[in-house]
Length: 394
Image 1 (tube, rainbow, N blue to C red):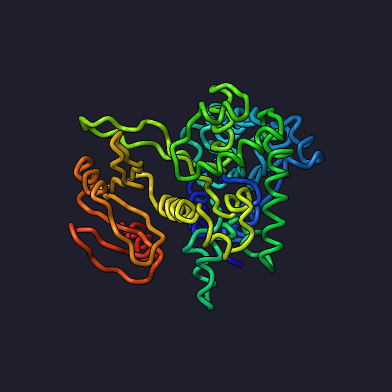
Image 2: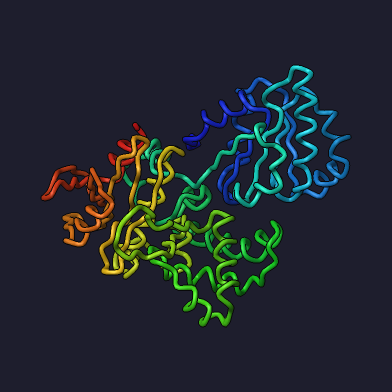
């Protein structure tokens, strides 16, 4: 079993907060992780899955049922299915606090983002801590990498456990196809938004072709015969359910005209490859999306290592000066990161111009290679794993 990086953080939160919300996409391993820490909490535990009619009915009168669970850690799965529950939880938390039970009361598992749940969970302010579980990241899979093959396997298959751990590439491919179909036909409608399954799937597939680019809403709208507003709402749906990341443009002070649209990435590279019909690693290596796929894989792994003290964006001016990823460290240093698949990466003059615009104090090329070395103009070439170690150490 691959140990999740967030394991200790989740255990600490449960032991120090009355309510913890563990959020992330479906099939990412939230339930497995939650149940794995039960013994370590030392508390009796009850698990409720709101996708089961029998468990959902238990909360038809949540106050009456939950009061019976005094002294227990209650794990509630797919909590977004019952948004009216949060108001009841606040009252029960305060009752149990007065009785001396201050931590480890409720562990909520949800497949919708914090932003989507926020309006329903406002009443729990000061009583709840949010954590996000992503698909497997590089540090997690390197624990099991005795043959040194996990790196490219993670990039090609993506990090969803059932995809990454499948016995063969074919089984992984089939699982990802089933996942995409069930997400648009069942899971997204079940979690709230009522959109036509064929339209959201077509939009998702088209979005894969914009991976690593600024999305042009008017182009997508014309292709799908949908309004700009509808296209944006579809994008927000896939963002809220952890399928898409919108990387916002740098917003510092400069006299230059900057691109203001977000840059779009499909967060899981395996889902990206399935939507683009890239069925083997060899096909990926010869595909035009190779560079953009690698860029998205690198960006996602970097952002997963950042604490909330970091800020991140991308930079692009109207004259095409561009930085793939701009990081602002907890010490307010600006780092400029260029991402290259090449084993012998080079840099364009426009990158240095952009670095001057954002006043970058460190410049990196993150590439698909094992060595680390400096090149001209203060740029450091570094592999992804050592760069992640650098970031996580700060």
